[in-house]
Image 1 (cartoon, one colour):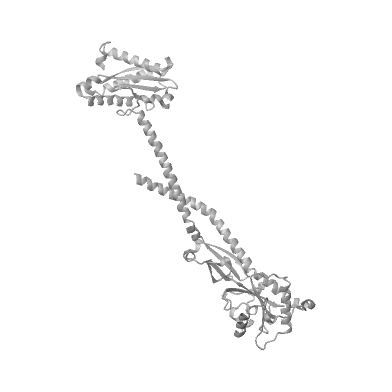
Image 2: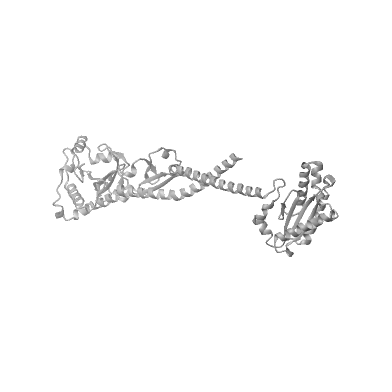
Length: 467
């Protein structure tokens, strides 16, 4: 029985813990997703806000703006050879030199702020590359040895305006897929904006290009990405670099997206399964807490039951299992005598004779016959008391004396009909509270009526013989 109760306790605790855990998940999961969403948004703004920078700078380098620009303002900005990569034998055209000087003007005057990006210009006609800041000679020499040019970068990475589709150029941004930069060893995302007066190929002079280190952000630590085609263009999907990303089914991912340009967007997928498993110890803690709490509650309940049983046992006569005299001290007794009541005193006849002639075992059986008859005649709400060996008291709540007299006669008949040894009978005395001010007075009156009943049976003689 104990093991069944223990298993039931554990099962109930687990069910309750699961409900509490689900409620906590419904609270914590949105907080976790909101935190990840803010981190993702900050990542996009900090690292990939470059498209809007490139777009503005590219539009600022339109040929019309350069031609109409006050050339005297560009006079202080000379070409910096340390930032220019020009193929052997190549020369810059005058309009290309003007573009570079205008580019330096915008960058140096900080009209367009640059953060966390490597910005440069690629010019198609001269195949020149001009960067925003000086860069190490080692990198420059490697570029020169490889004879890299703007056209070669475009052909390899396919992100320049001259190779882009009309749809891709609709927002003046061309975005590459993340790739491994052979010079820096970083995963780079390149974005380009055209330098031109129109999107016609013959009018494209070059691009303003921004490279960002895609994996350098704290946000990308411990994450991986993959490039997937989509109905709108290209999708870069970021997930956690863990087993959870591989074993989580699609329906347990929460995805959030942000457009990089009109044909490319980032998607960050969070494994909800990982979050649930991460908080699984919380479920164990809740379960253990509930089990301990239930055990304590059950122990308290069991202790109360045992105390109640002990109190009841102290009030019960061990042989007959009806009340003993201690019931006079209880609230049950006080509640019954608080209003009108009747008392019947009962005494077994010839019990001494049965004990002497047939032994105490049959004498005890005779006592039980009386008790069984009392249970058959009186109500459950009546208080049955064994006050001595064969002496009993019955307290009947809200019972007039006439009714009590009828019940006393009914009890006598019930016992007589049992024919126990053809000699067992009882004598009864009845009184009620209407004529007496206290219970003791009522009990004394009923006891006197009992002796009168006995005396009448024996002809006012041999009272001791009856006992």
